Image 1 (cartoon, rainbow, N blue to C red):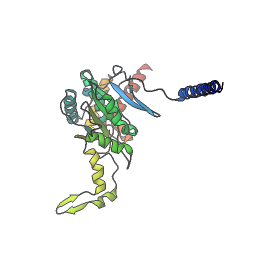
Image 2 (image 1 turned 30 degrees about the vertical axis):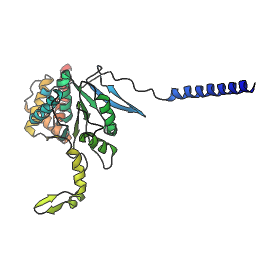
Image 3 (image 1 turned 45 degrees about the horizontal axis):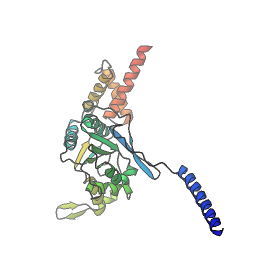
Image 4 (image 1 turned 60 degrees about the horizontal axis):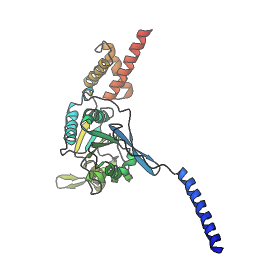
Length: 297
């Protein structure tokens, strides 16, 4: 009888434990779903609590390389590298740096649209998730596609964990190297980290040469791991007005070379403190919209 009672008590305890576990499971996040690689040409690495997964981007920004003006040399360099990569040839990780609004991120999107039919795919990774890069590489290393891991507007402060994680992947460590992926990053900072006046005091003269201090060397060490550096510069007035005309023609606006349009475009740039492709596009959208609205009155 005692054995029967003990067994009955054990069964009751197990039943209660099973009930507790069932209730706990309802509060736990579901495991990440398998990636649907056919759902899109671009994906975003998204972390939710303890779980992270690739999510397809269904509304991919459609930009044509021919729509990017004033950056012909930059396009030539980055497209050549991308074509090598897509065709399975040696290619470099790319760092696009320079003035804001000059086409850095637009170029990456345009290259995706051009080379997606040939197997190029893009995975957007936020700076805070760079520590997950080895996991992303492990997820895609056996895939037949060619992946660009894309980090937009990248910069670091001292001792950020993503800084070291990116260095590891760029170095091609044994845990992170993968032949079918590259990293393309855009930044307003050439060395990806802030530079301070006091760091100049660390420079030393050795004979006739100037050698940077340890702080400067550490900051340069990350950007140097990108094999291809491409710099973007602010446009001069003529280049800016030329891009304005291109976008006005895109919106089917007449009189794109009129003095009125040019004056308005220059004032628009002045209020924003920048002559860039982005500012030209924004002006063209505003001018086209107001022109069409005035005709309806």
